Picture 1 (tube, rainbow, N blue to C red):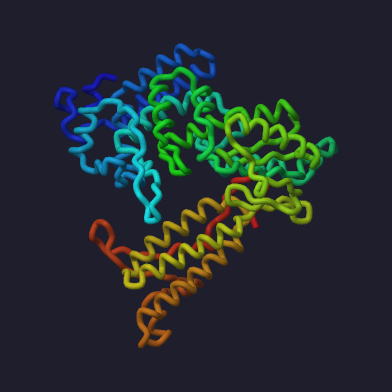
Picture 2: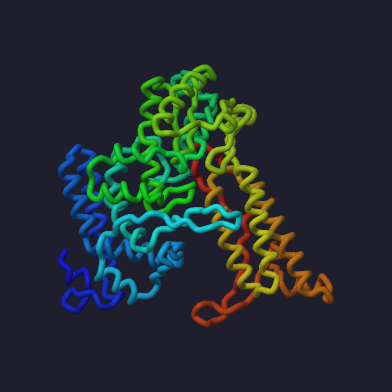
Length: 455
């Protein structure tokens, strides 16, 4: 597509951020990513390299990367080492018009109160944009190569996909239509890699990536330590870390193809029908990760029976009376209750509508993540704890008023529901709007894990 169709007006010259045809830009980048994915699947390495170069030089890729880093990301207002923040349309236009791929620079180490120094490893805006550009060609290339049961930081895959695979491996035994008994796995190796981001071998990542466009820049990023002491740039480091662990599933399957492997980035479990198979494969895993300069944590890595249960990706998986039940992890439930309590205490003098808006983000986010598993009792518990916090918050604001007065001011009744935390306020358009606290206990169940019935 010509520049004139991408940049509206001014003969294709970018002078205003609103000139960009974002629909066309997304279409161009999406088509190139799809072509890279298909070429990689077909083993056309030369075509992959040529398309990757084309995507790196694409104006559409640059525009979308600048928009992502400076406009849509949560870290858009975070200054890097150079204290630079780009948050206005004019600054974005200037960045695009003067764009050149940066060279990596070493970390800045700043003094701590105890006399030691710590790394300030937040990349500057230009580094983050460059990482987004490189990620756009590296991601489809490796998506075609990643193992089938690798779910972390991949487009179109999520924690819930990994959880669904756990369900298929660990569900109850069942009989087929012909009467044959199918036995499922009962033992789990819950592995934990000690200091993953701190210790992952950079050489292993570079060897896996090979000769790709800007491979030298990726090497310099690694040398400069954008993954340093566990502090890493969220733009490209998750993808590179995922590349570093590529091959783990193949190694395990070569040793014993009957084992199940579910990996989400550096968090993975191995399932088997007997404990001895997991004891043997644990040795193979330790040998493989040692080549990546990694070590399994002996304290956190354990082999457990499914009737005892284990935690994975914020969920607890356990057999109850022979049936697999997946629930929210207890520590995550307590953590979100504490977070809600801290938020409410910090907003003692805030408007009621502001409290509702902030709490709804937390409650809806938690509900959306856990609505696909057995969460009804947990949601009711969080709802009760939230009510306790809010009731205490409301009474503290009016110590000389009666409880009946406080209830009528902050809580409403609608149908059979009472004690609804709600109020009238002003919306974004300046008109009156109703603000109602999200009732997490009424969240409908979504079928994430095949075979789990609603409560």
